Length: 274
Ligand SMILES: Nc1ncnc2c1ncn2[C@@H]1O[C@H](CN(CCC[C@H]2CNCc3c2ccc(Cl)c3Cl)CC[C@H](N)C(=O)O)[C@@H](O)[C@H]1O
Image (cartoon, rainbow, N blue to C red):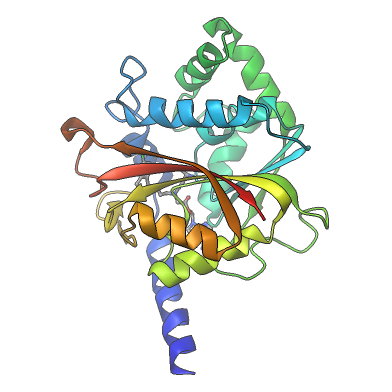
């Protein structure tokens, strides 16, 4: 009984932190140079986009439905996948983030960030001319079917009718689980919860922070993060019924440490659900 109470308190405290999440500031901190500098291979965002491009285009993917878990106000994570899957669902815990995504998808303008350089970069990775970014933008707007509320701490993170009964064919989740979980046990539980949304044999692409204990999601909005190392990520994947296909690690260079968090590294995992 006590343990259960402890768990709920940890998750409730985390949810309280997220009420002050500021999408515009968050995008400014993490998705502009130096962390998003497309002229540098050692910048975090080009590294993430290269991992995702390779993982989505190496020929082992099948199916129609890709679900992004904890999308936040960002779209980079589905810019490769939108060429492979005919239907994409975006999800986030906060309405402010779902609104930010809706603004871009409905092409209403007033977006907090210009995604053009991202679309152009992914076109380049695909061997297309950068000016094809307008086609990629149209493709993305065409395949994103919905933007849903999600809570990875629930054993059923999405509304019951959100997915076909067999589950999604592929999941992608970037920097979500470790930054919403109060401890490693909660991280592993959340990994299990999202695993239930994926069909057996489906793929999971997981990007996350290593060695991070906090990040700022706005001026003075400090959010605690469970610090992870590679071994813990691999153990949690195994415990949650995944087979690891590939793990890649990026170590932040000094100039990528801009004071918005204490991240030391980033992991990229491609795994398959048993
Ligand atoms: N119960 C919950 N259930 C589900 N989802 C929840 C819950 N509670 C909160 N969320 C939602 O998770 C999302 C977490 N989000 C921010 C953390 C990343 C941040 C901090 N760590 C280092 C780092 C960061 C970003 C870039 C880089 Cl390079 C680095 Cl290094 C990821 C957004 C997007 N996917 C991204 O990749 O930027 C957020 O949108 C919440 O609304």
